[in-house]
Image 1 (cartoon, rainbow, N blue to C red):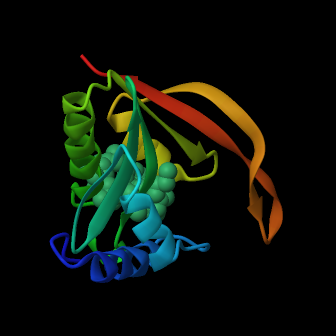
Image 2 (cartoon, rainbow, N blue to C red; image 1 turned 135 degrees about the horizontal axis):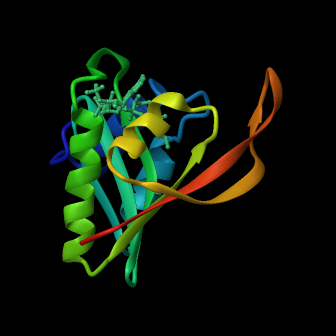
Image 3 (tube, rainbow, N blue to C red; image 1 turned 90 degrees about the vertical axis):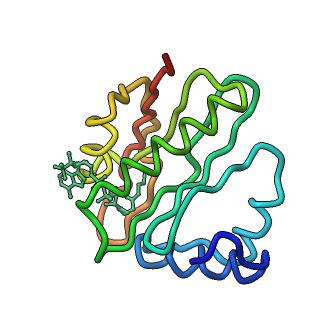
Length: 143
Ligand SMILES: CC(C)(COP(=O)(O)OP(=O)(O)OC[C@H]1O[C@@H](n2cnc3c(N)ncnc32)[C@H](O)[C@@H]1OP(=O)(O)O)[C@@H](O)C(=O)NCCC(=O)NCCS
């Protein structure tokens, strides 16, 4: 993915990267739409992406994905920290996200970055092969 590419090519690259990490990938159209929205910030490179939305003093991680071949090399953590810096510059003083309770790698990553559980949405993520899984709401205050 080339983050300086034309919008359509950028959205296509983001969709392809996202599809390597999620069973229900977002389309290029969905990415293009998000990139045009107020407060939405992208950080990424050819191996990973993070998309956040900053509203007033809060930032939300909309999605985070690292290509399977590039995992466990620190990229996920660097993307969260880069997005946090951008969010703080835009006035946010905390960041939150939703993560599936059974997503052990993501929970370990966020835990290592001092995100704390602040809430739960029961049966939030449908699963084709079993019961729906709760979403945990994680929060990290800046400073
Ligand atoms: C979650 C994800 C973004 C992590 O990216 P990553 O680049 O591998 O993460 P990092 O290398 O920065 O990992 C940092 C720390 O997180 C923890 N961690 C990350 N992946 C882990 C795993 N599979 N098992 C256990 N701990 C893990 C570790 O503490 C790790 O530090 P270490 O490698 O020194 O032990 C990646 O696995 C991914 O894209 N998953 C699919 C999409 C997804 O679930 N996104 C998040 C949705 S909320």
